[in-house]
Amino acid sequence: MSVRPPWLTRLLDRTADQGGPGTRSLVALASAITDIKNPKVMTALAPSAVRGFLLRRGKTQEQARIRSSHAAVLDWSYPREEPVLARLYTKALKNQWIGDELPWATSVDLQSTEVALLPPDFIDTSMLEAEGIRLTKKEELQFRNDVLAWLLSQFLHGEQGALLAATQVTEAVPGHDAKLYGATQIFDEARHVEVFLRYLETKLEKKYEINDNLFTIIDALMSDGRWDMKFLGMQIMVEGLALGAFSMLYKMSEEPLLRQLLRRVIQDEARHVHFGVVSLRQHFKEELSEAERIEREDWALEVALLMRDRFLAGEVYEEWFEGRLPWTKWREIVERSPGLRTFRQTMFRRLVPNLREIGLLSPRVRARYDEAGLLGYARGAAADSLDDGALLNDLAAGPVT
Ligand SMILES: [Fe+2]
Ligand SMILES: [Fe+2]
Image (cartoon, protein in one colour):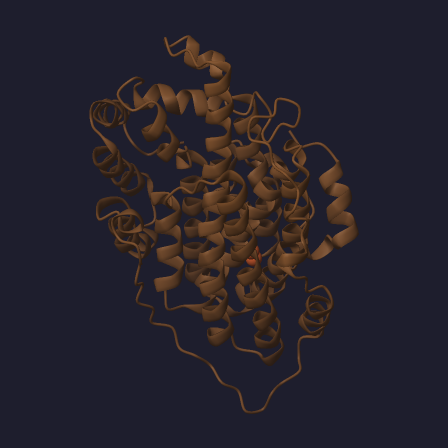
């Protein structure tokens, strides 16, 4: 699948094993750049990759300032031309909820062996033992809690990106119904930031920095001046993956407060992805040239692989195993652990059908999705055909394999 020659992969792996976090970030940059085939996609993603992987802007500064160049569109004719979006707007207004109303009094026992925050096989610690790292029962529990804190921290940072991207999209999208709907999404994302932050601060009492890959993707979609790229990046890619990730965590965790929180967030996110599919389907099929469509198709593919192949909990590795375990071994453990493997695959369960629905899964790229093990999801239901009931039934079902 990779366009990289094997000798370069070996060199990058050796470099990553011998260096610290900064070196691994450089290796990630080199890997990202050598993997991208489409020069236009390379040009679009490279500045964000430099800021994310080389300058590590998500980690070296408390605040990131991302310059955007989109045009804000005002329309004095207030056209009511999108009945599906108008219905989605009403539905969003009716389904608003207050974060404070979640059962925050629920006691979350971090030492409990009865109520699993994450399943024991989420990261298989027996594979660590094979590398000479033995964790006590207490350490193992702490390790799993940290992995959950890492995951929820990335959800939190993604939600902050979604809050700001939703404001940009609301400015930049043409169409009155889309703007009204977009305003409800801004509120939804604010609430998601609020509840994930509160859970991390008051229940897990721990928060991780943003992952360089996630920073790069957020930076790329927020700095791109084209409204449909913001839409594709946030509404389809990040939100689609998040919906799959939230659903999987909802199924895997036994902690009741977290499950309620996720259930409410999932219902909101389903509307957001629906908005993305409805808005982009027609635009991509009717208003783009073939060259423009191809650029978006390749951009989506690269972002999908960036998320799938490199979302490896590096921050947890640095805290627990840096200097004790080579990076490439950690990567192998993460990739082979049953829970996390299912989790990473299932993230794509909601995304791939939506890419198909908006016309970004042409025969030209299907082979690369197939090689990445993701084409099996292509026949699934897209967001516009999954209402709340269908989505919750879907949550009750097992993962598609
Ligand atoms: Fe959200
Ligand atoms: Fe969202």
